[in-house]
Image (tube, rainbow, N blue to C red; front, side, top):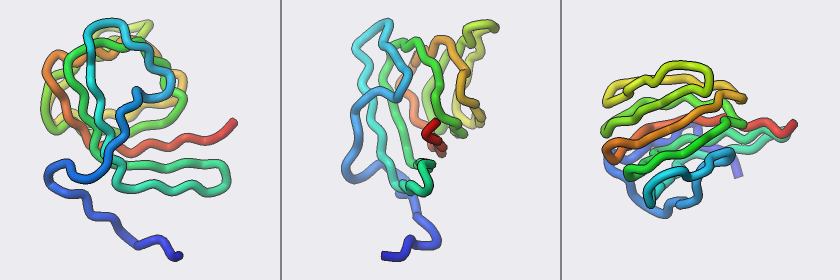
Length: 123
């Protein structure tokens, strides 16, 4: 089956979703709920490319990224504290790119929603 040339994302989340926390995340605080609406996925030559809409309720995680990610926040508030840096407050309209190895604390202050693209390559 041939892959389509484009995938249109719905304006509001629909369909099945994943609830597992991302790779490399350890919950520190709160009973956060995560919903990952993956609308596009492709694996080729040991490289996984995924994109969709991700949302999380308030809580905190310690994390170490094992993948590359670009995200654009649509709503909510997030405190992102790199292990070796100062806390950043992120909100609607913030766009961010993260590389593998980036580590720190991710604290959702208000339920957040983001569009994302991730790339994970088997080592």
